[in-house]
Length: 341
Image (tube, rainbow, N blue to C red; front, side, top):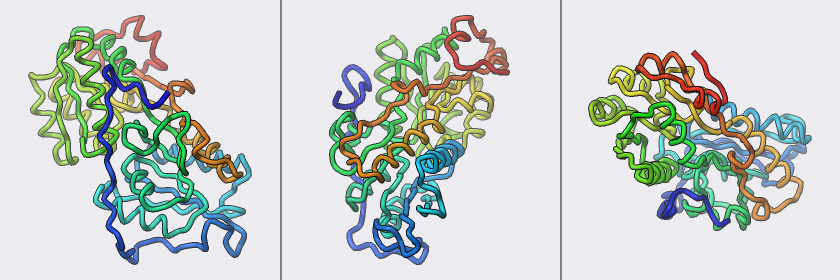
């Protein structure tokens, strides 16, 4: 298995390299460094954790990552030191964030997000465990899922587009036009939207693409879909996830149900919340990190996929369905992980 079966023909991103300016000086906001990947003077090794934004799914993922490392004997404040930093949700900060974290001279880096991992790939040979990375092969991060090679491996949040559409068509059986929303400036989103569009056409559905470059574009983008879409499908997209309440309210006001990545989204008013169990993926990443800290080569460790680990969750909101004149069928209820009100 080389990469992810995104669609037929297989959808792959053109290789994107993060723009890292050579010789960029770190600002005073950079975190204090340590003396290499070896233990510090107090006998602790540094583990750097980097992500683009702060979201509940990221917080859950990172907490599980740390907890699993503790289970494996790597306890914060005892024999390891965690240094965590994010880019405030701004893609323009990725380069500085990557430089800052490399400056920590950590024993290992845990990086969440495809573009951030691409930046690290250009800057360091420090072992990197990646997370929230949908298609690491298509993005050019690694050559093969089973044999990543080099100094990186990790977990993917990829879920087959067919899974999303299976749920979508059970929930909205009369849907013909599916709006695909997201910030296509994010590698993960660009990959998913292409895959979603291919899957929609495969099922004789009409994909309607609605790019959302920033959170300021959410409301006008959704309003423009009124009368043009029967349902909105949103994959793993940090821009929309960071403003999920606005997305769901605006779509509801426009009379369009939403199928949103992340099982918790159904409790916030989405028709269906479907996505990986991000906390359990964090636990898996913690195990991978412990293996690397104990001497295993990252390039020899296969990438972990949520479908293969049975870590896909789907929640259906019965009350939301009724508000749109839809019924949660027995088939949909049986297929879902949970059905709530």
